[in-house]
Length: 327
Image 1 (cartoon, helix red, strand yellow):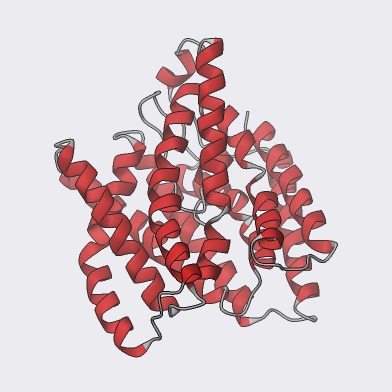
Image 2 (image 1 turned 90 degrees about the vertical axis):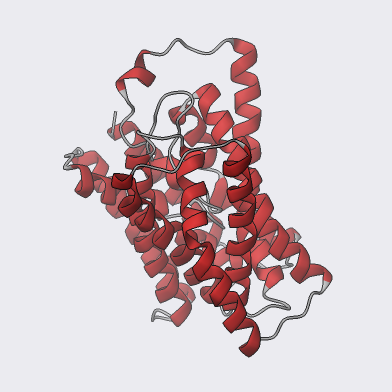
């Protein structure tokens, strides 16, 4: 997973995470971006390929987390993931001599850090201790709709009745799925997943606002750097109380979640969005939950119930309707 809403100028894109769902709700595009010249055919093709690579990278987040948990405790996994990605992001910011953000941006970056860097990875990792990745992918597939609601409340926008009807339908489909899969009641893992939707949506919304004033990769980069001291302390404490065994799966899972999903995936995703724009890129991202279901079968050997792909497809349709309803 990461993951996981705001269009900006071609060199400024909205924040996202390892889940990559932040962009799929399509928060209002800036006037400059709307007036930009349409990309050339070759540029569109290259941008589409890069955006698709980003979506593919994000769809592997949950399977890689499941691999990591085979040898590493959940708190240690999240802390180490944050440390590794923060060191990489900090190195990139330092190498490019990016100046510190303005003081007025730090409160917003703290919200992004709490929701996107710490909250969502931690809550979904805790959920994956007892939940299958397929189940989690369906529930977290609701994140674009949750983010759309948060953005409407944050910006004071008034979406149409069609938007709200589609959002509520998608939410009802996911709730019905989780209750049915959990035997008539929500499990602890489900509670973690629903909480992750709320906290990550808040982080995505604030990140989308900040990305109108600074490039999106810098938003997530500074949020990661902001979390580095806490992550180092958290890793030191967690490693003393949790198992830590670097098997092939756990090592690959940790490295992928930190580098492949939360860093390299962002690079190609942001570049692709800059070339083809958020609306077109977000259409590709609608396939992310379904891709995660495929990976859960081929990489983890999970068995899907018919309800999983059907619910994921229903949520995909609802997200598409909300995008059209938002303009």
